[in-house]
Length: 381
Image 1 (spheres, rainbow, N blue to C red):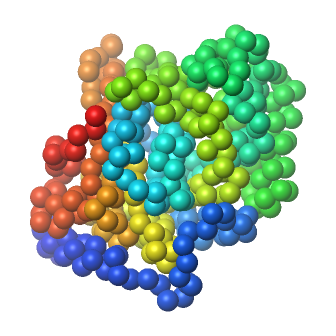
Image 2 (image 1 turned 180 degrees about the horizontal axis):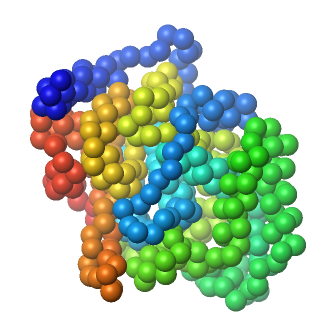
């Protein structure tokens, strides 16, 4: 089959699937709404059965990144528009902690974090344990960075003030060791999640990186000036200067803790263009009469468009339960200058109605990543 014929065939399927997604409900699952709490058994069964085999990910740059934190400084700019436009259905996302800010701001009924890297799923399990056992933001950061609680900060401190207060505090090896033991106890003894030895090593490696980097941990270790630190990310705001960061206030942290303790942030290992994970999430949501209200894709689509995987991705998206309010959250990177031979980037985050993109794909209007980036975008102010 030629590329042209394959494209038309997939586009036709996407059109049919988009309509079927609104109607089809699996008969093998009793119809019900999304529960306010998933049991530990149901949570872990979902993680295991919905996930695909993980794969390594390498960014477009020369430096390998473990993606322990985001590198997108624009991520909060679209939050006011999202709060006005989307309902409280299901949130889908990718990557590490930036999802917490979107979840705290949008308050979906359930969230699925889908990433091709198994390490990301394990990172979210580490976060889950730390959030659950922490009394407040200071306690959480003390455990995350393995640094004793600093003086001079409290319930009303900004996220930036909290991070700045931890900067001069030395890492405690005893606190790091005790925290890691508590994390594994929480995951394996309390929740009874089954982790392999390799999983435990991955979680330990991630935790060690946070202990070493503290508030200044970055997306990679190159030292490039454009790459934000954790404190830089938490200091970001929307265009009106309001911070929505998950650590901006005790209220936001309590919202996140409510999701973690009720098992409603479900991290999955999956490829956006794969045959299993996105479709499994779609079937789950349809069986619970729920729609996708927000789908944060970061810049993953840019990688999918490097091959015909983007065709499979749009086809997968077309099987999700969506409505007129379902919205993509998308980030793209623009090189602004070169330092030596290395580019420096700035990020732009936009929103895009999911249904409209699927329709544009079906019409044949989407052939490249640039067709997506240059689509007319709703106002985000």
